Length: 195
Image (cartoon, rainbow, N blue to C red; front, side):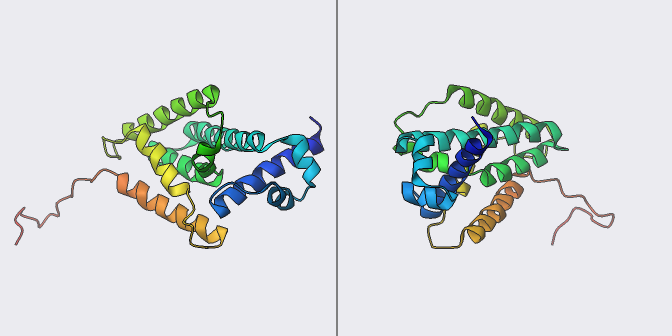
């Protein structure tokens, strides 16, 4: 694919993700083309029907989130930081669209991405638990379901930037809440008795 065609395709995918997260559902093709700054003919050349567009958007969001997570697992200083960075990256990469458009898709299986995503979740949770700072009952499913919740729009008309900032803030609250309680350190004057 030519460089300009590849750039237009990416602009269309990014525009579709933005619109899905803003409107909370399937955007019109005219709105996608307008947001991407291309003509409707360009949209149809890349995605001849709505299913092709939605399927490509789901794969694109999954691929970007998984690739970011794989890089983070290799570079993050500790397991909790890897988990935090991954969840924030997935949110920024539009992972919420996968859940939102999933019921609209005729084809919902991506064995290659599901395999990579599953391995990534296992690696992230295993590394986070190894640091002994997280609750021991944390599972891969907990992370996946939390991402679904945090990445859905609030649907109360907030500007997209404010919506995203709130999601990131609440995501940090969630991750902080996953940290295992640390034993209190007794002060030298503490006799162990509480009044």
